[in-house]
Amino acid sequence: MSGFDAIINRKAPSPWELFKTNPSLYIASKLYNSLSQQLLRPLSTPVRTICISDTHNTDISALIPPGDILIHAGDLTHSGTPRELQVTFDWLVSLPHKHKIVIAGNHDTYLQTAEGRSWVHTWRDRGIIYLEDEAHTIQVRGRAFKIFGSPFTPQHGNGAFQYPRTGVTGTPSRWSVIPNDTDILITHGPPHGHLDLAGLGCRALLARIWELGRTHQLVLHVFGHIHGGRGIENMSWNSAQSIWEDIVLKKGSWFRTMHLIWAILWGGRDNSIRTIAVNASVVGGPRDRDIRPPVVIDI
Image (cartoon, rainbow, N blue to C red; front, side, top):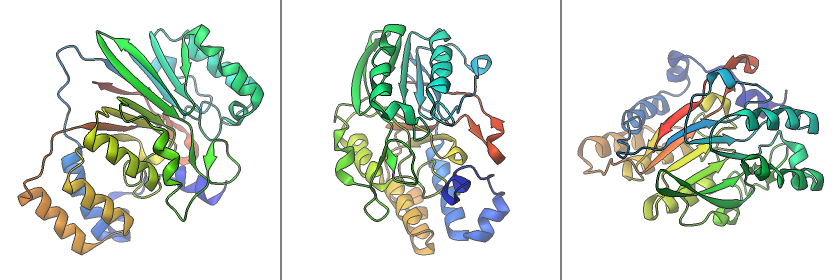
């Protein structure tokens, strides 16, 4: 296992280990999480969205509840072979959800070949919408949702669907492909500082979703890739969130942590929930032996 894969798949450290390693970052994370774990108040007719990612050949049919939309945010397989993908495809087809939206991940290498891309174009005939840097609009319970999906993550090793890094930020223009009127965003990797083990995500993606979340209508962002980052975060696109992201970028800062406390207590902040972020990684824990259920979100 490579060094980065070891980080992605590592066992989550204990709270005491986190505090000892970086006290200011740990305290800031607790402060920010107190804001970001609010519950969204769904509309009177909510749309139930079932979110999964990083199943890596695992059949979790028994864990998947009913819902209106099923989203798979990539890493359908472990080795990306046609045989693995066929098994996963057959499993996805068997699920009863009316709308099934799927992207690839860095492990799904066959889907980056000409043959693989030709094959996935036939998936729609079986009820699976596969997206690769493209958008698709669905109608659910009288509401329209424009969904954009992308399998790409910053370059590491020889995985599929990777883009060059500029330093550690990725290529900023890479994410300009996301339409401004996107309602649901599916990417394989997380944005920097959010459900990414405090800093393994992409800064360029974060910059783009700030534009979408602050000035447009982004409701839900589903991703995976960083197995240990699994969870839900509500993003308000306010000063507290910006300060938190700066603390992650600096890998901890007592000065900025004091700013975060000020923003929480006296900043006159807007804490309304605008975007729900979900790291829906299914496998996790030491050697990916833990199998976690889907994340269910009502929007």
